[in-house]
Length: 600
Image (tube, rainbow, N blue to C red; front, side, top):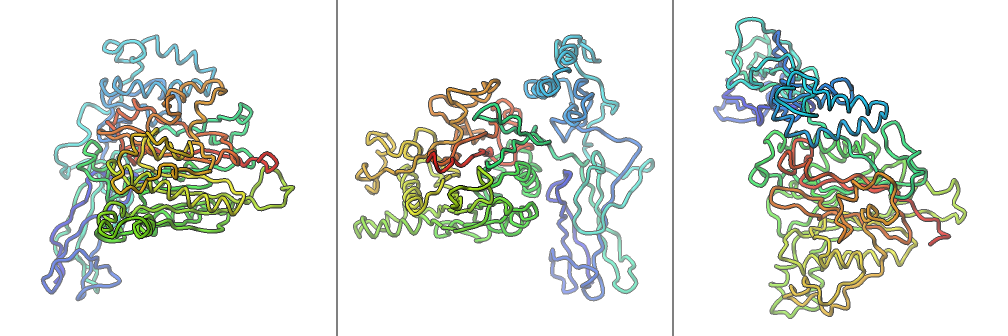
């Protein structure tokens, strides 16, 4: 007869919006063990599994720390408590929690005061009067705290047991999976699985149950703002969400989302396991990506199964058409469904699809070795060059223009390249060769049409490296140290390492000589030696820039840029990924405008 051997949850910490799927091991009538579901619609030898989810409610509701969501809050910031938009970020589990978070937290106050100028005096008053019950232990602006009425008990007991009284079980789900809601925050959930008779519906034996920890809210980072860089008049075009709406412009997002297969707990041990789990990261990444509302979205490290099962259908609901190119798998092993690639999405109401080009660097490596590598060295050459990296090039036609009617009557095409260059830092020759190969392909497209170009992706190369220099300068100095690494002589003669595309890095606009007022803080997040962000990748072992959005400066101009993140704000969680940001990279986004053809 059917019986349940055991049940458990991959993560005991439930998060609002993240689906919970218990692991249920059953013994089938033939004595074999399996994890297959046995629903009422398909009973096994007259028996099926019935599931129930309950919210365990008691008289006592806890409030959760905004910084450490697995801890109970005992303090609340007075300033934030009086502003609805900041209440969710106002709770802290201890005075130390608040003081450690102050550098990041005070920016919330400053932003709120800037958005409501008449509140600035009130902010100063709160920061100077020492109001709050902790005035005796905290000084200055740290004293704006009040005790939450939750008592000193730990947020998570060492073991959760059924209480005898004062407790109510409220049924919240009747399926194997359950997605916690905001109503569940602060409560324990109980999962119940029991074998039932298909005819009588009566239970057989005792139910198997498991209790979760208390449900926590999904961390919500402060929204990143789009910063105008091409004139103050643009600031008048803000919608209700603060996003710039400028007629005739379009936005492009580039983001390495960190594939699930790469998000190992060994590499990112500083990230809480629940925040590193794919069910949580998937939900958080989708929230972030959809929230940017970019017209074109270029993602890297998108697993094949996740593209087809999650990103394509979910972004389709938001009006995006999806295109995908999976990495080749001559080197990579394991299931092809878990191999990642590049995905490009575009809004159907803004663009239509014209053409798609798949670039496989493995094929280019085969052609190169056949052409220039001696027969005796071909295997060695292929072992070095074949790394499964790819690029996805998409030609789109815009459904908008700079003017209501285009005097020329020509279609406005845009070419978007999305790539993920080889990660191995010692293979400097391979990186440069891959970038050069991509640029030569783009040159052919540019020669066939008057078309603005965007080159986005994770290039796994620092500003000032040979690949970066080639992209932005159109050539590489023969004395560049990266050219010393060329065991196959594939980079010679060095004079061939050129291209004619007038590419500029979008984020270099943050260091233009003429900038609007109040943008100095964004300039401080730039490296003024390279005109690139100080970092786009931030882990415990590495911080630097690997991600870029390049554009052809003779056909496009930058209107605005998504603000960069501050390292100090990220280091409060050690590094990326974190509960707030679910990749080891940060997203880059730029707003562009096509130049009128008369100016090209």
